[in-house]
Length: 298
Image 1 (cartoon, rainbow, N blue to C red):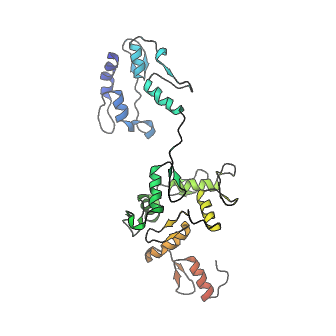
Image 2: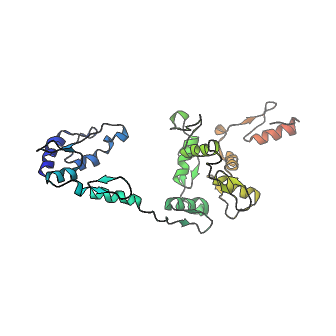
Image 3: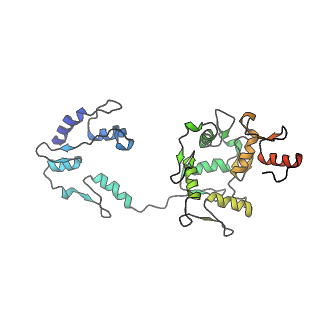
């Protein structure tokens, strides 16, 4: 131990944290205090070597240096994993490593009493309960500070701000590795990659329980069952953040929420033959057919 203390007193005294200007007193404190010095964060790292004062032995293991100073054979204290090539002189590190090989127990699933939803994450289960099964009058709403939008959970408002109030140059975009697609969220890029770049063999297909239909996402199968089989009992309803209205698809919800947008926020569809304008492209198409007798308007 004196060898180790001698090393600490002579070597670590000169080490200062580049961010806090604090000098650690031992190797453990340096590793825990200066986490930002790891190469993982692309900062300066310290490659410490423990040296024996009586010979040329060098090591980065405190346990190994202690055994060396006590003239004990190192091989007798080397912990070897029986299932892989991992070795360490630290019994604690060995015990932590062996946990990786222990078969994981089947996670406890949180099952919804109102529908077939299941998850192993308590947080996701709580969010599901709030979004799908909590009466509107009992919800603690989260409000947007830039418009009248409100969300049932904090994440709803965060995503709303990202899509509605964040300038493109301020967004940390997520890019597809195989094409020029970019998305505002990691989930959108994942969905893009699954639907556009996954081969048929590698796709995890979700199948309908009532027919032979298969979809690349669970959402596609849910929409199929709602449209084709009218399975509304376990429907994943999408609720409006402004009123009690609910829909079955995000497309329908986007059309509905146009009712709540201010005139200056709306992308208007203008008729080139008169002063008529509308929030909905389908309304403009019907207007041209009825008023201007324009057939086949797209």
